[in-house]
Length: 124
Image (cartoon, rainbow, N blue to C red):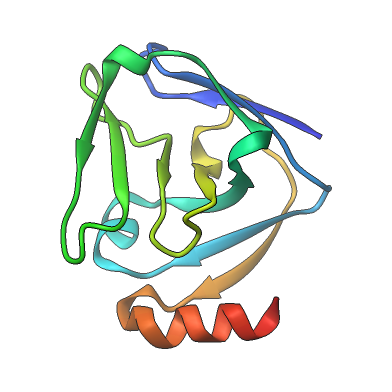
């Protein structure tokens, strides 16, 4: 299934291929995801293509610095980023897709990141 989306102003645009529907999604309660309403669809790097907006992206890192949070410098929206939990994949914000999709949502206790990651790894 092809997903198409981007930021609010349209400067950043992407396409991705995923299995589904429903599409697996993680609802994280870490400080950044909770505050921004980010709903994660994890997509391997080779199934994601940035169509437009590479020059419009700005980066933010905090904590361990492992995650690279990418925001549109025009509108401030984080439509995708490089997560700490999945270094071989991008995380797309389901709320930034052009068209809503059916999601199979799993809770990710990002507020207790190490334990949440261990639980996630045990499921794979």
